[in-house]
Image 1: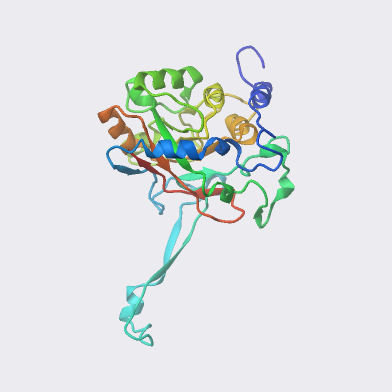
Image 2 (image 1 turned 180 degrees about the vertical axis):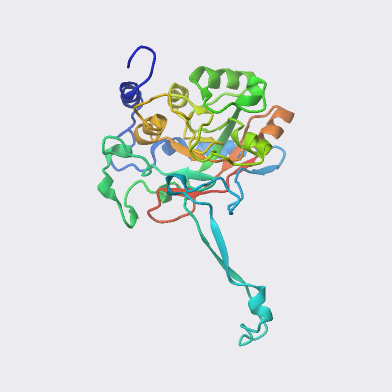
Length: 318
């Protein structure tokens, strides 16, 4: 580290400090999701008071934010059988019944999604010290997203940073640090603890809606989590962190010599799952209205064997 400017040495120090490899055994593929116990899941169910459900997913269609950057494109949906086929008599060989069918081509991290523990590598290793040879052309043999298929349920906590700071959204390049998260939680009267799913709103989707265009949302300058946020999440032993931005972290990154350094610290070393491109605006409005920033969260991935990420339609239930 040179002066107060974080660099690769800062990242390595934080990665080592919060490393959990072996904590849950040499064969563990769940990471921080081990903290989501049956007791915590039962307690989260008790947070449902109004029976109000919020979908936190963007529409998965061609109106999404992807531009081809990083090889990612918006979902492409097409009909295999449609009403025109029915009208043309293409199914007249069937007795009485007619039907429609469709298909979709989707990059698994092109919309509201989870990163799997097999998604990020550093120094040749993914979570729990496993090597890249375990992610083949057929998918991940270890740490794939299906390991989490019955663990993405628990207590969700929203930290609404722009509302806390008294503005409609954070500006691109504005970093959210450890103290920001702590002060926001205190102002909202909510505690973040072990096994929680922490949803951090930056207002970046709200800003793009206001502008009427996604622009460079996918991979461009963005507000997001700063390096010191690792202290907030890791020392509270959360299960996962989700944001309304393309890549969770502040862009440009604080480290000129490391791309997406928090991914290295949280995913590779701490085993904390990251969710990205979550639409938190409607939920945030409701939380501000009733002053309740905790809820039951249900957000299982698709069970795509070997996948290193997954689309998701997260449900916040209050």
